[in-house]
Length: 378
Ligand code: IPM
Ligand code: MN
Image (cartoon, rainbow, N blue to C red):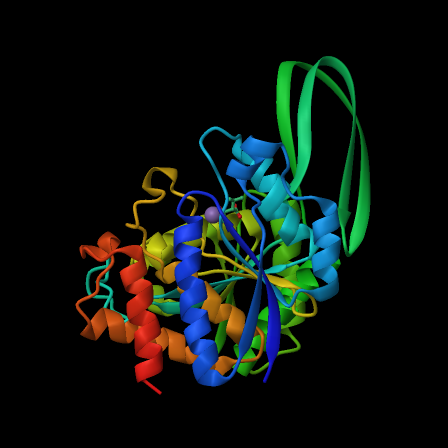
């Protein structure tokens, strides 16, 4: 029986509530499909940081590297902790440390979820977004410079390179704040290769790349040229590129236009919230941070929603679906498909309905119903 060790980080706010439903459903799936999951729970999050001053120790990352098969995370964030501290110190730290350069975010309207777009149903709203997950404006490089001479040193560590910037800024503006964005040859090539390979494997006909090359030509022009270059190796797949603002419009006007989309980091962050909105809301938006040859992390794309903490009103489907993505990444496509089917069965046939789509079911009732369906369906 295949056996996996999973790092479990329930995190903050509604994170623990939705993650325990995820664990419940994954365990039920494991029983049906003969997959053994072993959970190692860690307390990290903004709330833990408030209590202890500890974010996420490097030693843990090194430990996980030795034995973990995947990471399953709820949500990070607390109103009393500056987001840049908790997110950089935990969530982004994991993404970068494990070099999870693919952020896979399905935009798929499930059967049983009311469509927020007029005349669009689950046939029209069904595509994959692959968000590059380690570069562009997310490298976290930048600073402030005051009037006069400024000397600023910046370092960037990634598995694929190490960069040092030594900046001399002479300014007659009172003060500036700046943020550097960058993409690299290796960084672009690997995410495009992943995207085209996945499109091919799934029998998709078209890949759409998004950029904002008309306004930020250095990085997005490079991005686009690498997309076309790597794309040449996949003659059977149609290549299309569009600007980010136009992409936002087409998400709403003609989502059926998209099959597989690849986006730079920040653009993908914005577009996938829109993707969540057109597929029923954040309660239905799963995510996977993937390193195809390393340790991947699975998390719903919603945040910790502190005001709903402990009330059992959150929709756990995004977290459960993220768990399904984890099983698929571990090689269990059938188990993944069974979870999606069970979710749809519950939404279509059962009286159980999450509050965010007008129902009144509690978080755990939704998890219970999905776990029950998985067992009944087999
Ligand atoms: C997401 C989130 C994160 C991101 C934040 C919390 C750093 O918005 O996963 O989309 O921007 O990647
Ligand atoms: Mn986001």
